[in-house]
Amino acid sequence: MVKRMKVFILVKKKKHKTNAIRFLEQKKIDFSVSEYHFSEGHTSAKETAKELGLDEANIFKTLVAVGNKTGPIVGVVPGNKELDLKKIAKVSGNKKVDMLPMKELEPLTGYIHGGCSLIGMKKQFPTFVAIEAEELDVFHCSGGMRGLQLEINPKIVVELLRGEFADITM
Image (tube, rainbow, N blue to C red; front, side):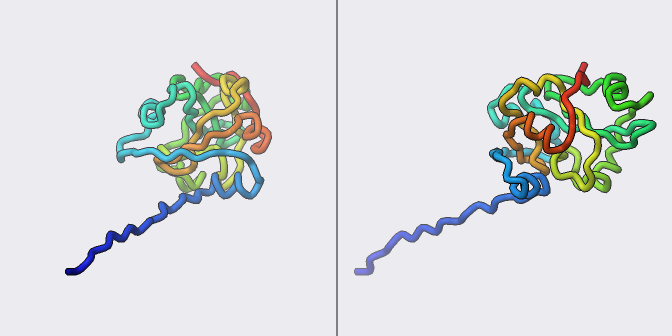
């Protein structure tokens, strides 16, 4: 009689190291990472919030715009609100601001649509985080790829990026 043994092999899931995560680790900043399932068409904060069991207002979107005087600028807004181009133009010292064309996002920032993080872009651009984040202990933002969110203190992020909190939503 042959005795059979069950063998279990533990496969460690590979941790994703994005530019955002590498940057935060290099600066020794406390943060946590949440992974979630996404599909190719999934790019909304509402879908991300649902996957993570969070309120849409706690998921902050990173949007890149272009000012007529400053060039690229970054706006970070809650998932339940929109970026007000007139307000961000005013706080950034521009007369006019337009959204960056999607095809220019990855070459400029190093991130793709739906996975753009305000942290770890190829170049640091003027960054404006919605005033709604200023009183939060933590907020959720993209970790630098689809399916990856960072939970981090927004005050630390603003200080680290030399950004500012501003009224930029509608």
